[in-house]
Every structure is written in C-alpha cells, then in structure tokens.
Image (cartoon, rainbow, N blue to C red; front, top):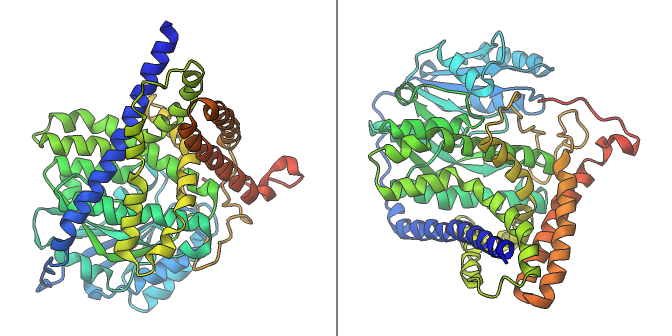
Length: 494
C-alpha cells in the first residue's frame, strides 16, 4: 500500500501546482479588468523639448530573408536624424553579410546615420553583440529590434516621451503579427502572444509587479543597463535576466499596450519549439540565478510571489507532463476517488478566460479570432515535452554551447514563408518521437480512465490529440528534410 499512497500524494502535489498557475492566470485577468477603465484615461506624456540621442541596435545572425526589410524599416524611423544612430550588429556566416552591407550603404548615401558592426568572435551571442555595440557609443537610450520586426515610423516618438519619469528604465511595446493569418498554427501563436502582452504584461505593469523586456520592440535607458550590471550571457534569456536585475536595482519597467511593433510568428512547428525551448530554459535559468536575491529583497511578499510565478511560468509544462505519466498508475490503483479534481477543473477555466479577454480587448472580430483557441489548447498540450526538457536542462545546469536562434522566413499576411525549403529549416529532434510515444500513453490512460474516472478521460483525449498534433505537424512540415525519406538533410544554421 505504500507505493500507491506515495503515487497518490505525488499526483495531488502535481495537481496543486497546476492549479496554482491556473488560478494565477485568473488573477492576472482580474487585474487587467480592474485597471482597464483607468487605462483609458492615462495621460499621454508631453513631448520633450529636445529629443534625446537614441541608439537603435539590430542584432542579427544569418537572416538573409528579412535583413533588408528590417534595415529599411528602421531607416524610415521618424526621429531627428542628428539624434539617431543605427547599429547593425551582424554575426552572420552566410550571405546576410553582403545583403546587410549593400542595404546599409544605400541608406548611408541618403544621409542615415547607420553603421555596420562586426565582432572578432560571437562571444555571448546576442547579449555579447549588444554589449559590444554599446561599448562603441554613448547614446542615452537604446532601442532593440530583432530581425523579424518591422517597427512603425513613429515608434520612437511614441515611446521616448515615457522616459520623462526618471525612474523608468525600460519601455516595452506590444508585439503585433505579420503573418497570423497564415493558418491555424500561426493563429494559435497569435492568441498566445496577445494573452501574454495584453493581459499578463498589462496587468503586471499597471499593478506595479515585476515584468520583463521581451527581447525586441522595446527601449532601454542606458543608465538602467549599467546599474543592473550590463548585458550578461550566463542564461539564454538575456532579456529576462537584465529585466529582473534592473528592477532589483530599483528601476521601473513600463509596458505600452497601445504601441504596436509588428513581428513574424514562427511558421513551422520546429522553429516554434526552438523558440519555446529557449524561453523556457532561459526564464528558469533566470529564476535560479536571481531567485535568492529576489526573496531577500525588500519587495513586498505579493511582488515576490508574483515574480517567482512569472520567472517559473514554464514549470507548468513538466507538471502537465508529470500529471500524465503518474496518472495511469494512480488510476489503476483506484487512487483518484478522494482527490479534489474539482479544483483542477475550476483552474482549467483560466486559459479560455485569459485568451478570450485578450481578443475581446483588441479586436472587433474577436469571436472569429477566438475560434482558433482549440488549436492553442492542442499546441500547449503537445509542446509540454519540449518545454519540460528545457526546464530540466535549466535545473540540472546544462550549459548551451550554441544560441539556438529562431529562424525567420519573411512570412507575411497569408504567406507561410520559406521554412520548408531552406537551409534555415530547423530539423526534427527526439522530442517529435517522444510526443508520439506520449500520445499513445495518453490514449491508453484515457481508455483506462473511461471506465473508472470518465471526466478525466476527456482531458486525456485532449492531450492525446495535442501530442499527435505537434508531432504530426512537425513531420509534415519537415517531410523534405527527413534523411530516411530519401531526401538530403540541409546543413544546419544555428
């Protein structure tokens, strides 16, 4: 009886952990609604009498499809030319170098203050490139755009006035979507991003909680970067890490929901999983790095709790995976009869509430957009193995020898991009086969639960379909790149 009791206790702990994240998502939704009426009356800060010097950094690595679009967009920023300096921080090893140099020369000839910066080596990857660029200049504010972003011309004029408050160290804008209409897969990602920005980031910013710079589409005050210890690369989420170090140093970060910076959504499942892996591992690395310092700080208990849940958000995925793996033996030993499954069901309302609110707040056709929520459910369930492995690597201290970039393919509008046909395609890894195995495991578990705990069987069927969806989509999108299908696998670009 000891082993079944231990399994039931473990299962209860797992359910409790999942419920915490679910209820906290409801709290974020409530905070968003609480602050929404006041947000409509937020005064716009006055324009500065003299616009301050701004450095725009464009860290790129092998971005041949989007580098010209990025450079053209940033060159079109409406800001006093004598106050604007653009750095193209190019670590590329392919033809991106030539494309960037030619485009920069074109804009320099037009009078744009734009420089091409190439380091001796790639130490620190993106963080190292930005730190190297900062060492070459002394501008007061630094705007950062990844290669897949297309900022609007008025971006800086709308953001810089918010630094009139001397305590503001960074201003983050909301990511828009260049290719959310490409299909259900990109629609689901757009839903997830909207929920993160319009509900979570908005609620944190308005409630005075810790929030993070999202790595692109934001502006930093140089003094805040310096006070926090500069860019560091002992985690693979340098943006998350710097955000918390700056806030622990006393700076305030601000989110602007009404300033939109359009960006490309990963058009392939393998590219999406690589992006999620980096975010999951890097955020947990940041928690392990700064958690003790956070808990010892003079912040309120409420801020500390929310910060831990924020940095450890991806821990939800190994909890979901563990719930499935432990669930089958618990069901077989009839251990579910006394567990509070109703609480888990209540927490399960959090995702549709949070993401539904984000669509309602943003779009007149919100019902049509929210109709893709089932695909987000499948994507969230199926990505749990990939993200759980990322959390495991962070917790065990496994170092990343390469910065696994998310490739961009110039996917716009309804175009899916060139992800399947290029050397930038991210190859399959073991998690795809693992997802197929877990799908089979879930199916067996659902069949057993159907005769003993019918209500749980419904959730397990959803997980089964979710794992089949992610594995099947990855296989379909990677068909031309699977070596044993008789087609050569392209060279990897990392």
